[in-house]
Amino acid sequence: MKKNVGNIDKIVRIVIAIVAFYFAYTTMVSPWNYILYAVGGIMVVTSLFGCCPLFSIFGVNTCKIKEQ
Image 1 (spheres, rainbow, N blue to C red):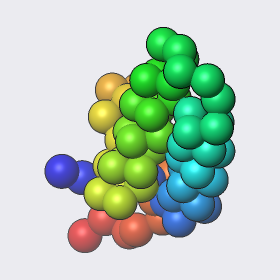
Image 2: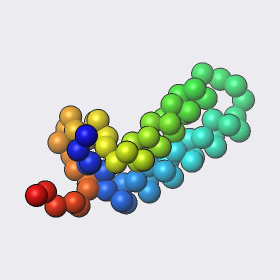
Image 3: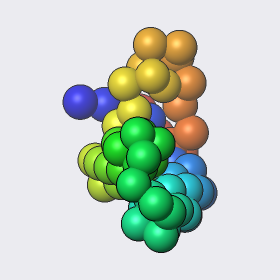
């Protein structure tokens, strides 16, 4: 998979994931908790692998690695 997530984008995704996990954990049990856990999980996975499928579909690239 081609990397298309830059360093700043990774940091933003991790922060969003932490916030989503926090709100999912501290609120009362509701269907929104599962959605917040899913959002947090997706953000963590995409930041760890450096590839976002939605970025690939729309042609967005925030990674500054030069192509050879």
